[in-house]
Length: 318
Image (cartoon, rainbow, N blue to C red; front, side, top):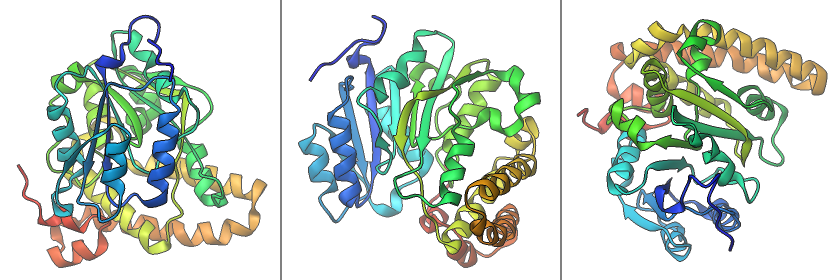
């Protein structure tokens, strides 16, 4: 296996790859096979496994990953990733992925970290392509959030881009350790959005955020209506608990309207028969989001029922 150093400035010994896992199944097998084909493989490999009951941890070890096991109830999007950062103290670039984001080409990791040759880049995230067989609504979401053209964002882009300026995804993203340390790292207690939380802080602190469209993974979800409701409820909780993000970057509704217009135009051109399905989902997502905004007034048992992350509500804030 060829391992290259990017532009003579990036050594695999400086790079870590971190993947939280839980019962990865056949998708995890495909993930590992795609990873094994990479032209650049980081020296530091870590899986934080939430006590999988299948072969996820065993397979990870077979491919050279160190496995750190936690209970399923311990997992938290922020604290778990912060834990990984503390375990891998020798890595200067931290790549975070999810177990269902399949590397799309052998140079995906290599391309992802290339922008770190610029010293003022704090984080980079790659493009997510719709998985094979994705339905039109699922595919449009990926095409909307992950366009073909790369871009670099700074704090000066906030007035123009609003909340989109801080958009990033830990399904395939890399961070400079020094930058994460400077802004306090991932939060210990957060329902989701730990990636946007740190990218927003990075931008406000003067760092650059790069979208690297040439670095690609296959990653999308065919959520049921109930699953989508739960996800948008959690997004509402995130925004309610981190009000500074909307104060600094603008309200989510503006970006939501842009998405609605784009989705309807896409479906009208590609698959008009899916427009009724999209129209049904739009108010459901909005209601879920608004309920999440009001989570402080809801009883715990109801929040657990409405949330995609019920264990979150049992974890202590610290």
